[in-house]
Length: 157
Image 1 (cartoon, rainbow, N blue to C red):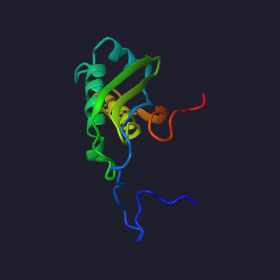
Image 2 (image 1 turned 135 degrees about the vertical axis):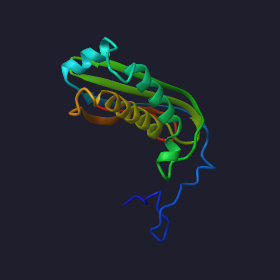
Image 3 (image 1 turned 90 degrees about the vertical axis):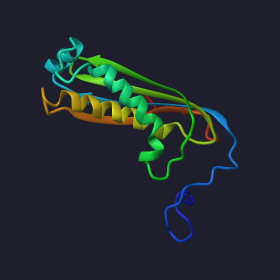
Image 4 (image 1 turned 45 degrees about the vertical axis):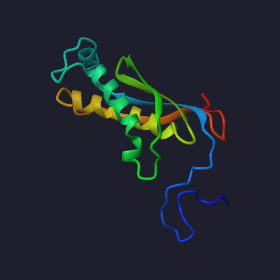
C-alpha cells in the first residue's frame, strides 16, 4: 500500500515538503456545471439579473478563488499562478464552467483549477438565487493536468 503523503508517522496531518521537487510547467483544467431553469439562463443571457452581470462577476470570482486556493485548502501550498482562465458556456438550462490554471512551480495547479471552477459556480448561484433557489451545482471534476512527476493525465471521455 502506498504511504499517505499528508500524514506523518504518528498519523497527524502535515504539509508535504516540496523543497527538493523540480520546478516544471504545470497546467490543469477543471470543470463544473450549475443547473438552472431555462428562464434563469435567459435572464443571464439578457443581463436581467437584479444583482448585476452574472458571467463577468463569476469569472472574476473564479480567478480570485484560484489565486487563493492555498488559503482555503489546509495542506495546499501557495504557488505563483501564471494564468487563470475561466470560460463560461451558457446552455439551455445550465452554465458549464471551465477553469484553466498555468504555473511554473514544484507542485500544484489541480486544486487551484478546481477551486476556481467551484467558486465561479457558487457566485452564479448567489446571483440567481432571488430568481430561483433550485439551482444545483454538480460535476466538479478535473478534466486534465500536465507537468510534474506524473506528467499528462486526461479524463476519459
